[in-house]
Amino acid sequence: LGAALCTLFAFEAAAEPDSVIPKPVTCISIASPYVGDETFRLAHQQLERQGKLRHLRISNHKDLVTIVPKMAFKFNIWASGAHVGTLFKHVGLNMKLYEGTSLFELVYPKVRSGYFSSSFDEAWRGWDNSF
Image (cartoon, rainbow, N blue to C red; front, side, top):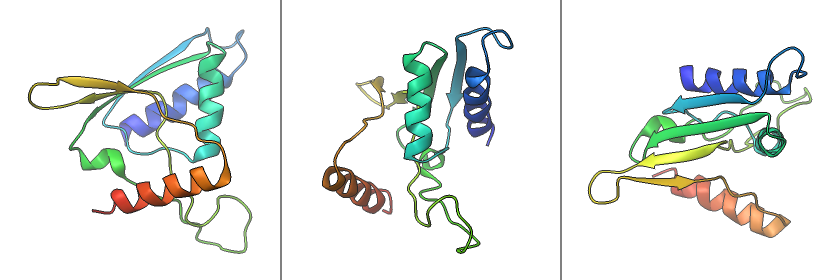
């Protein structure tokens, strides 16, 4: 939970005016679960492109915490807001740690475009992370 809160706080701090909080805001999170959906990821990446936010996410490739929660659930289906079943996304540069010969890998989240590409990727990730 601490890494998720760290990510959310860094995002909010980076979005504040420069006169309130000096930029860039640097966030180093360890073993963070998914934090937001695609909209959050795009806003996070926009702050990174503007030089207001730097985020390094460190994860062990076998850590189950880093692949939950898989999707958002809306308890009141009549209220507006997050869609039922919206898949969460990771944000920031990921340093994925491995055992054995390859010690780590740096991965930045991919942003897909196009309805079918995105839908297929979402379905595959949901299926892949279920087992």
